[in-house]
Amino acid sequence: MAESVVLDPVDLHLLRLLQNDARTTYRDLAAQVGVAPSTCLDRVTRLRRSGVILGHQLRLDPAKLGRGLEALLSVQVRPHRRELVGPFVDRIKALPESRTVFHLTGPDDYLVHVAVADMADLQRLVLDEFTARREVARVETRLIFQQWDCGPLLPP
Image (cartoon, rainbow, N blue to C red; front, side, top):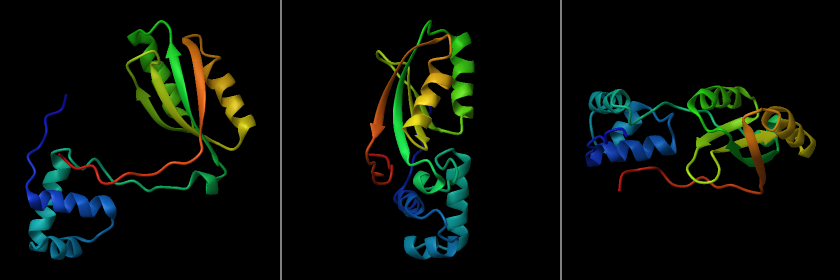
């Protein structure tokens, strides 16, 4: 498990602002937090180097890209052994339909968030890319009606 990083109120304020808009300039961040722009740059650089800030992502609307149907696939892999897990995860991550892959505890080994064009595309994906694999024992599909992003992730 990764070590946590000690964050002061200025760090937390910077993280809150950046999570809401990662394109905010250092000058604007500094003004909102009440520090010099050079201090702001130093702090954000330290947060990147320490691994608190992992990167920046561009969010796209799957529906506007022709992938308006999203689903969660619960996958059981048998046998659940390391030599099968790596290639399975690599293949699933390489699929253009895959959005996120979670390795889980419990009866299911993986939860895969996918975005596809329609039901026929989802059926093709499940049959051709999941259940056709020898190590996949079971796939359970749940359609996503709607999703909401939650607030910023900050330490308690």
